[in-house]
Image (cartoon, rainbow, N blue to C red; front, side):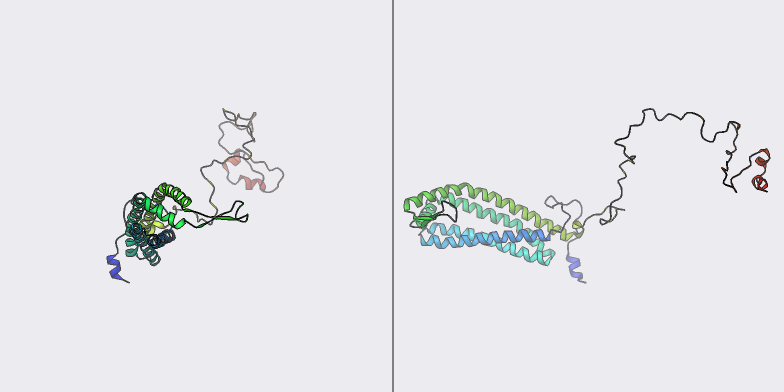
Length: 302
């Protein structure tokens, strides 16, 4: 037993969960690993694209774009390292590492925000350089057309400088709003992934948070549930039967069954028995002598 770890481990949280905790009953470990993988791959591919644009800017003599590419590539690379550390911490399930990853996930939101702001600033402040670089790279390139689908006739032409400049201007106008929308979507996803990371950290502190609570005296789930006691006991074919009268059922006519008029109304003796021809044990004597003799039936059978 590692007593040092028991002494230094923070106690389970008490009270209501914080606002960032997700109300879930399942283990969030696979969810956190999936989010970290998606975020890491996105940041890695973004960093590769930014670093590749450095060589393109140098080849076209647009060195003013190099600094922006280096800054955005470094920020995306930092996000990649955060997600790699998150995968390691979640895989090992060590609370100190998961806590550090949760804090770094919140910090990665600032990294993503910084990269997006730098991209927007570069897009509007370096408009002429971006269009000029695009025009230089697109001039004298072959453009292929598929007028009848991919398997149809194919034609191509060589784009000149004027057409390349017009095409690059249209692409720049398209990216003016696309960069802002992508920044907002990326920030929303980064915030959601951060909430998942903090919720998983809370689950590690309190293992009972991810367990399913079973009601007391409840049958096991693999058994059929009992009948619903809240439903009244309905008679057979009630939906086709006539409803009962509003004042209740009327009493049947005539005297009650096994009524003998020779018995006084105030007689407290039980009614007499009739044998019906069934032999031994069917007769009973309730005369005046038998009313006072408990062995009247036995004497009558002798």
